[in-house]
Length: 398
Ligand code: AMP
Ligand code: ZN
Ligand code: ZN
Image (cartoon, rainbow, N blue to C red):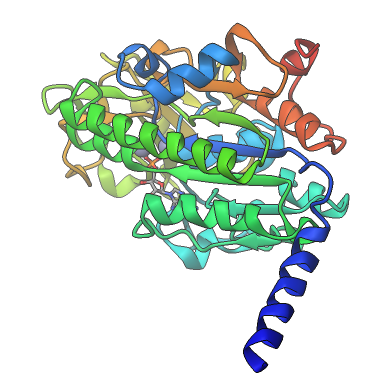
């Protein structure tokens, strides 16, 4: 008899959980970032799942914002603003209002401080205000209380959380009763970027990472289908990748006394603050013409880069010729492999774009990545905030 009672209770519980699902599930919008997935990787013939989604939906190339780095571009896609306007002007940056401190993506004390992120409002915050529930399986900024708000569900970034677990977490979110099921979900993969840095964009290791991520996305799509959960997928990357090696290095020590500068960022571009009192000497040495590198005062950067008005941009920005690297002393990482951060007009910095089920079809060409924002907001049904985007994706919707 107690066993029968338990059975009855279980039946009632299951009915109650599914009662809200009596009608068809509302579609979810899933924004997937494959870090460092260069646009042309999709043509390597090793991505059956991504290629199928692209063929049944839309594909294109995203032009990243300068600098073509991870944090500035992830934040651009969820705010519609370029780095000058959203405030995350680099993976590494300093702010004159916070002397002695440095933001760095690997330093949680700084990277989780809302101070750095508050210049813009990301999609999940605006969605939350509109009553649309978000859940993030990683996205730069999603762990931060921006304007005191975070996604309804979020996780602290941890590269050791495996891809199967990331997919299962999302599928678990979608198994929830309608009232607490997210309408907007993000998902992030770092493996393609990792392999690109270590082994270069043409390597077998990059291909293996691409194949792995492709199969994970296949598993996600299959899992959603099993649940009967309709989904609109936006699959993006933050930037591409370019081969680098030790024979193409510009050493700032050959041009200036390193004690006279603070190098906030080095590599494909260098962000340089002259130490107090040395501004003119540093500027004279750097601003003259160099082989394989061009330096500008931040106020004189080419207008097409839309970069230099935010006080977090360092006084002098040197941009290496694609494939070259700028260092101030010993390189902080092995130079041979791949890198990104170059001028965003470099075709090898262009990034993946696939939209599936959202209304876009065909080849949409090359589009600035800030345009992802209005499209995303349209898909989740929330009015976008003012941004730098012009709405070219939205204009293509039927
Ligand atoms: P990059 O130096 O521009 O190549 O940055 C890529 C790295 O950013 C990846 O290897 C990730 O480990 C890291 N990353 C991605 N998302 C986050 C996050 N939310 N918090 C901290 N680090 C992250
Ligand atoms: Zn990246
Ligand atoms: Zn990277």
